[in-house]
Amino acid sequence: MENSVFVITQGTRCGKKIVDKFLINNYKVLKTVTEQENDTLEAEEAEKQAMLTELAWNYQSVFSSKNIILNLKNYPHIRNFIIIYSAPQAETPIYRQDPIEIQKTIDFYIKSQLSITCELLNELSKDDTSSSLFLALEYSLNNPFRDFFKNFINTLLDDTSLTVNINAFEAGKETPESFADYVFSIVQDKKLKSKGKWFKQFRYTLF
Image (tube, rainbow, N blue to C red; front, side, top):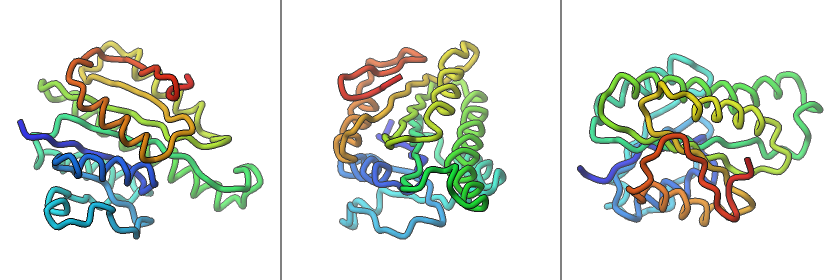
């Protein structure tokens, strides 16, 4: 089976570094692209670009999330999935923001990630082939949504009915580069088969 991975990211720096890390190591990468993304991939070589497939994702639409997951039928060889949970980097606390901005923030950082995670789990549960889902939380000072995702992910880890190998971890104050190295090493380690495992490293996983 060829090396391949599906990365669901909202265009954050950590997400881009993770995608680039896999491309540099000759993985075929399928990734989501939101309307907010306008930066170019750091792996500029033509052969690396040929290893990348992008799927447009409208984070405001539940139907877009469903379509993204339905597209996976065209990539049956992909068995490793990474969802990167990012956090707003605004200087102003969310409770001091304009109501419209608060709604946009919730749509982008909560609704979008929740809907696509649920769609992915639903689809993978229909398949008897073993899949691994890696849930990676970016570090952000005073992340208002950290506890929400902590509780949501712990619920997934405790659900014995799920047939997917679910692993979760959080970055500490690492650089995007070191976090990408860590995520890559975890996916590479084929010995980690147990479902529901938090990776407790010195610098990672605060839960």
